[in-house]
Image (cartoon, rainbow, N blue to C red):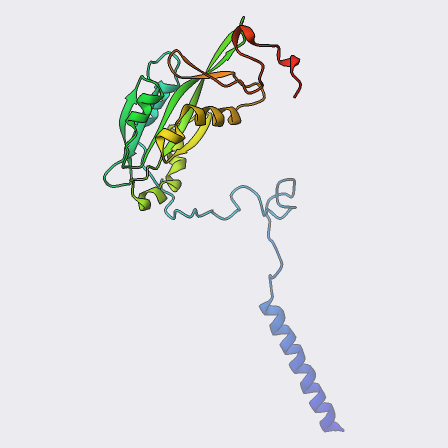
Length: 242
C-alpha cells in the first residue's frame, strides 16, 4: 500500500512539473500589449491598424523604382498640348536604345494626319493628341477640347518589346495625363480612323454627347448620336424620347 501511494505521489509530481513547463512556454501567448489608449481607429482597442503598425507593402517590381524613366520634357510638352493658349496639338515619344527610358521625337501643331505621320511604323511608341468636340445646335455652337492617349504597337515592332509596354503605362500616363480616351493602336490607319475615334469618343462621353468632332482644323465630322439633327436642322433634345 505504501508503494502504491509513493508511485501515485510521483505521478502527481510529474504532472505538476509538466504543467508548470507548459505554462512557462506559453507565457505571453494571446496577449497584446498596447500602451496607447483604446479608441476608434485602434483596431478594436488593440492597435492593429494604428498608423505605423501595418507591415510595409512590397510591390511586385521589387526595388520600388519606376519601371520606366519618362523625361520631364515629355510632361512639359504635353502641358502645352493641354493649354488652349498654345499652338501644340500632339506629341510622340519612343523608347531609347536602352529600353529603360523614353525620348521625345515629335511635337506638332497639325491635326490627326500629322500625328499619324509622326508615329513610328516599326517601333513601339507612346503619344497623345488634341481634337475638338463640336456641339452645333444652330443658334448655339459649343466647342470643347478632347485629348487622346495612344499606345502604339505596330505589327512590325518586336513582340517582346510590345509585351513590356503594359507595365510602363502607368509611368507614361503620369506625364501624358488628363485625357478623355485611352487607345491602343496596332494599325494606325484603322485604329486612328475618324470613324473609329468618333465611336470610341462618343462611348467615353456622358449623356450629353456632341454632334460632331474636328480632327483637322475646320473639317467637321458628323456624330449625331441621338439623331436630333445638326446646325439649323437640330431639334430640341426633349423632342426625341430615348
